[in-house]
Amino acid sequence: MFWLWNRPTTATRRVDWQTPSALIGAEVDVAVNHFVAVLYAVLHGVCCNVAMGDIDDIQQVKYRYLRALDTKHWDEMAATLTEDVIGRYGESIGETHEFDNRDDLMAFMEKSMGPDLITEHRVTHPEIAVDGDEATGTWYLQDKVIVPKFDFMLIGAGFYHDRYRRTADGWRISETGYDRTYDAQMSLKALDFKVKVGRAVKQ
Image (spheres, rainbow, N blue to C red):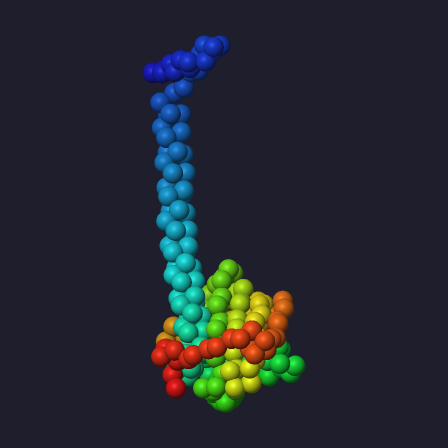
């Protein structure tokens, strides 16, 4: 029988005898383990890339929703919502408004946020989790509402809690609403505050 002698470089200089078949078996095990590791990395990378792509798309939908809201482009805002969207709004004005479809929600928005009302909505710190064709999102909200006609301004913050659904047209908001951390109301007269509506807002 043919023997190979592998002499370790350790301080003990232990003699380690291995047959060629043992060495071949070890090499096969290493190759198999390497293949499995590479396959896992590839598949995991693909899954991660898909998830990250979905998260980017969901963020774009949210940003578009807020831009359309503040500029009063109602058709664009409606396009970010599913037909059966659930909405919860109005905590700061002493009453809540809840909706279970897009038509009613958009009718409320157009009526309550007309040209005499100026809004600013900013969201940061997105926490988005994707599960197949559904997703959830939590956003940190900071907003401002100005009503020059009544010398009124509201500033506040809170957290949006959204749900999203993948549709044939891409990701859409299927549920949205927020919980306030605070809001503050003030008189524009007391601040000697003057405001002018910019051209980005649809009149």
